[in-house]
Length: 160
Length: 297
Image (cartoon, rainbow over all chains, first blue to last red; front, side, top):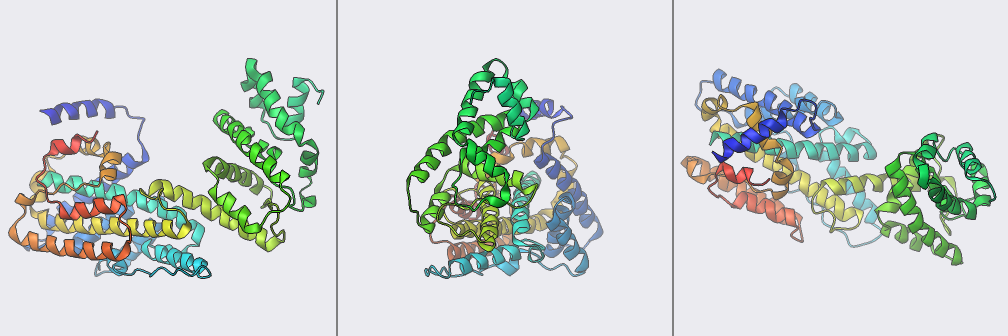
């Protein structure tokens, strides 16, 4: 009941057509890409176990498609469409690569540069941008990742 | 300056300091505001004249208030902020001018410790200058050759962007210095990516059941979820219903828990707040109700 009333309030709120924050736009696009893709996966594969990597692929694809105004999404799309066998694209490569901090001050700049390079590796297509661009894109990427995680959470939640 | 208010404003306009709207905004309070504004200009009038000739600046003049007048140009909010900023920096520039010798590093540390207002100062001023060409003020005691000026311009751009990132990444406020912040950002991005991977793994398991539930989902429900976004993301609490998971799922969950613990413990020396949350995220398997999620409003 509570949920319904809350939903009603939200519905009234969201009935205003003009005000759409970019995060809402993104999440709508994302869910509209992801959900049909998952459905399709469900219907196509009659085998009992849906490949985890394919789901990851769809998840990443949905991310890339819903954020097309950013440079990193283009790189991500390219990466996804070029690889026929979808491998775990992003996170596996960066697991456990931590640079030990150097206390020497002379190396400070080098340390910062190394960290920037690592950040570039995390961002899809980051290595092909210069540092300034990369920092801007990282900001957008983080935002979209956050929205993506909350979208996924709500999808998972609604199915449990 | 014995000019009347009108003449003064016209002079300001000529100097391209003030847009025509400024005069309209002034209104009845205008004269007082203008007097305040003028007082800054008046002190440094000579410098202002020389300021127009970009080539002659050797860089030995520290930041003057006339330098900051350019910000007034934009809109009213900027004007208010600019006035406040000017008052702050006015005091600082005076102090600097009083001191005779300054060590280079001292200057730099001072600049790095300045508040947000000064950052926005240099931001807008350097933005406005970029229209013509990159023009950087060298501070007292610093090198004035082109390379170091360009280098400083580049560094200022970088630090400006780092500041933006600081606003996005939670927990960055406590860490100072570029290296620490970059560390935080890297950790945050990695943890977000791991979350996504984890969630997609869960989704792949739940997918057969997805079909039944998807039809119940309406876009408005999604909207309801997503308007809570800021709170939900900041709290970083994951709603995991352990009881609904089939047995084999728990083993894969354990795997991901170990995995994430490893990566998190490797990275951080101090436990920042969001790291603690993300660990709770993987470790806490609480039974959840949907109303909890909505209660974050």
